Image 1 (spheres, rainbow, N blue to C red):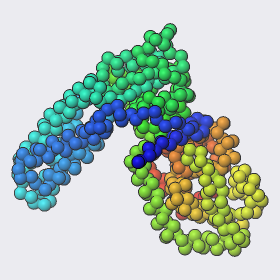
Image 2 (cartoon, rainbow, N blue to C red):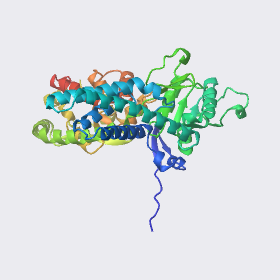
Image 3 (spheres, one colour):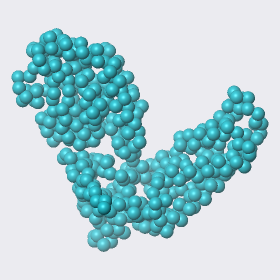
Image 4 (cartoon, rainbow, N blue to C red):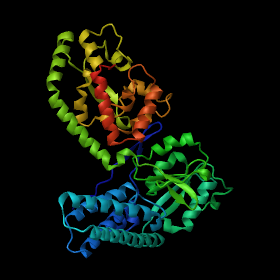
Length: 477
């Protein structure tokens, strides 16, 4: 007989350090049927593919270049944001972009026809593109109508918390209750001092305070958090919201001065109130998994190719300072967990206390010629490729610090602990911007948090390239 496995607690990075959350009391997927659990974009993609296939079949026999046309069409739709999650769905909003996608599809097919000399009349291709565009609009209109119906009947719903029980938050909750076709089911408010005389006057119950946000999300299987205006300062909300980064929850933010805020296509609109859909935390995306694959491949290849260089470095360290080529030091990594970082030894510390608390040895008189060259060229960091390969670190990320200095910086540097939301890196955004050695810790933390909030694979590549140019220029620390 199979034994049911008890889910493990979730470790979350909070304002004061790691916070352990108990396992979710129930599965949010149980709130809706199996066929309605995928993101909206997945269903729209399926509708577009089936529609394109049906039109191609109607123009029998289909041409091989139709496959190219489909790829171009879907890529155009993806670029235009036609697969993004939305509260209000209207085919009229999609018309210009669907037409543009049809034109892009037709252009690609005609260009390919000319190159491959395929015998297809341009008029036939234009007719098929027009039919595809019209069919996609009709199919999407039907899909939107079906989605709104499913939302009204409670078959397609997303449990929602409203953060802030002020006038705007109350208006949002009341609107969501009155318009179930928006798909957000408000379970309650989070605030300390609601803008009502009695909590019973709220359109949804007051569930708890800001400090309890992550726990409430877990307990009530919340899938969407709407951040309105409440009794807490916006600056203080940053750390609170970051505790939810690892949770499967989407965030919609009411911008300041929303009454004069222009609503762009990337935003949602709730009956006159613009909502900014906060970007998903980087480590909740598929691209973040690709980042780990890149780390493993590049670190393994680098260890192989640079092994002669590392052998020379090891011999030089042994010649200058005797036994103990590799220097091991405890650093703080993701979620505040300690790990042992590896480096080529520049000099031998007097004891472990000196190693843990000495801020910088760049100007230390004990530093010999080999140690100076290793530090100047950053070759002393090469053993950290092994840290990357085994998962302690990433190639790009915030540089790890020693526990002594983490304890010193946390209380006096704003949002210092937030930089531990991702794995530490061999190089980082702060380092390629000159923040190495004796530089501002506040600036480093700011750069690191900016990197995390705006992470992309392309951004990592840029940092790697800039790191290589700095190493070649021997601008190490």
